[in-house]
Length: 361
Ligand SMILES: [Zn+2]
Image (cartoon, rainbow, N blue to C red; front, top):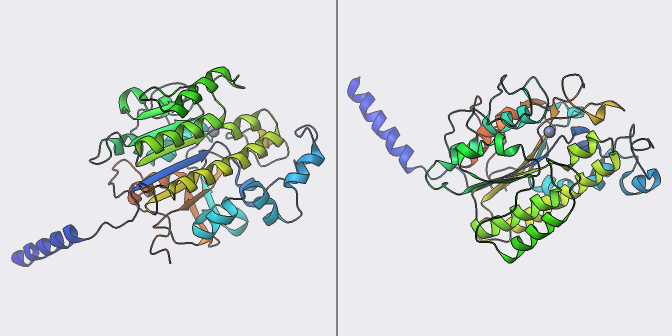
C-alpha cells in the first residue's frame, strides 16, 4: 500500500508540474463604479426618479438622452459598451429580476467595508467606518505584489483618497495614485500635462477627484509600466447620488462606460495585454431602492447590499447576461481574480472561481 501511495504521489506531482498554465489570463484589470445600483445597470434610468424635478435639472433633456419604455433600450442608452461589446463577449451577473443575485456579505453596506470585502475576499466586522485607518487585512493586490513575477507590477488608481488606507499604502508598497495625487516618477509628457490640469482644475469634492483624472493617470501608467494587476476605482457616481443629482449620476455612469470601452480598446491594441487580460467590473455597495432612499446607502436603506459584476477576457465564456438563478457575493471576487492569475491567495474566505470559464468559442 505504501509503495503504491508513493507511486501515485509521484505521478500526481509529475502531472501537476507538466500541466500547462490553466488560464490564458496574465493580467487582470479590476474596475469599480462606487455605489452604482443594479437597477440602473439592468434597467437604465429609474422611472420613479427620472421625472422628479427635485433630482433632475432638465427633465425633458435627461429623458431625451436616457428614457425609453423598454428597460433593455434604457440600459443600452446608459451603458452602451456594457450592453454591446461586453455582453456579447463576456458575462454580466446580478439581474435580480431573473433571480440572478449578487450581494455584499458584510453587514454595513458602505464603501470601506465593501472594498475590503471585494479586495480581501472576507468580511471584517472591525471595518465599520470610512475612517482613514490602514486596513489590517492583506488585499489581493498586496499579496500579488509579493509574488514572483508580480513585484512592482501591481497598481491602483482611485478617485477617492481613502484608498491609500484601504490598500494600506505604507505597508503594502504597491503603487497607488488616489484622491488628488499627481504622477511623480519618470513623467511622460501626458503625465506632466495631467498634473498641471489637475492642480489647476477646481475639484467639486475634498476627498474625491473627478474620474477623468483617475482614468487618464491609470491609462498612462499602464502604457508605461504594463502592470499585471490594476485596480481602477471611479467615484463620481456615489458623490452625485449623495448630492441628490440623479442627472449627474446617470451621466457619470455613461462616462464610466466610455472609460471602460477606452480601456478595453487599449488592452486589445497593446501587445502586452491583447488576448491575455481579463477585465472585471463591479461596485462596493448598492443604494436604497426607493424614490427617495436612492441617494443614500447603509443598513437603513433597503437594497444597499445588492450589487453586480461583469467580466470579459480570454478565459471567460460569452454567456452574456447570466440568466440562471444563482446567488453570489462580492467576497468571492478576490479568489476569482487570484484564479485568473494562477495565484494561490490564502486569505480569501471563498475557494472557487465563480465565473464560468473555459474555451471562449
Ligand atoms: Zn462607496
